[in-house]
Amino acid sequence: MRQKIVAGNWKMNKTYEEALQLASALLSTFEQHDTPLPKIILCPPFPYLADMVNLTKNNSRFSVGAQNCSEHQWGAYTGEVSAPMLKSIGVKYVILGHSERRQYFGEEGPLLAQKVDAALANNLTPIFCCGESLIVREDNKQNDLVKSQVEEALFHLPAEGIKKIVIAYEPVWAIGTGKTATAQQAQEMHAVIRKHIAGRYGKETAESISVLYGGSVNAANAKELFACADVDGGLVGGASLKPNEFVEIIRAGSN
Ligand code: PEP
Image (cartoon, rainbow, N blue to C red; front, side):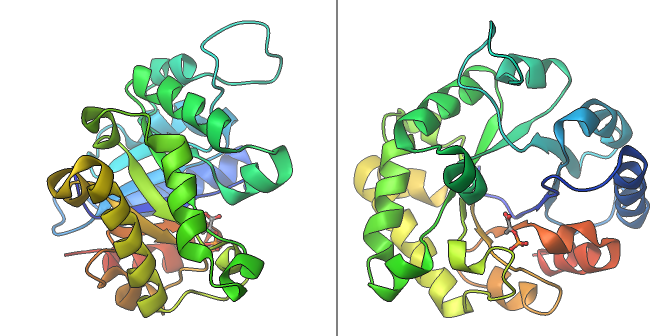
C-alpha cells in the first residue's frame, strides 16, 4: 500500500550498544500516538536485528528491516542469512539491490529477482533499490537504465506481488557523496518509474506503490524532496546515524 516511509540504512556502522542507543533515542522522540508521521523503518546490521525487533515491538510506527538476504531458503551457504531466518525473528522489510551490493558484491537483475521472490515468499517487504551512475546520467541514459533495473528484478511478479514492493530510487552519484538529486530530478525519475510500472501493471497498481528517494538526504533537503508528488519518503544512509538529523528527516516525511 502506498504510504509515506522514512527508512534508515545504517550499513556496516555502530556497535551493538550504539545501535540500541540510537534506536532508543528515536523511540523516545516518537511516541506511539504521535500523528501524523511516516512509517519508520530501521535497518541495522544483521547481529542487532532480533534485539531491534524486540525494542521497537510496542511502537507500531517502527518496523525493522535487514540490509540484504540470500536468494536461498536454507542450506550450505556459509555466511549467508535467509529470508525465513529474518521472518522468524520478526523482521518485516529487506533492502535488496542496494548500489553497494551491486558494485561490491556483483548483484544484478536475475539474482535480485530471486532475492525478491525469497523475500516475498516469507512475507518480507523488499525495499528494492535502483539508480544510475554518474556516467549514465551524463550520457542521459538514466531513464532507460532505471527502467531496465526495475524490469529485470520485478516484472516477473504478478500484480499482487509487485504491489507488495517498496522501490527506492537512489542515484549512485548521490549516495554518500553529499550531492543530492534536485527535487525536480527526483520527481522526474519517480514519475518515470511509476509510469513504467503502470505500462506493465496498470495505473491503479502503479499508484499503490511507495517510491522512496535515497541519496544524501538530510534535514535541510528532506522536506522539499518528500513534497514531490511521486516521492513517498526516503531511504537514508549517513544522516540516519545521527539521531537529531534523522528525527528532522522523519518529521519532514509527515503528511
Ligand atoms: C543509502 O546508502 O541508501 C543512502 C541513501 O546513503 P546516503 O544517505 O548516505 O547517501
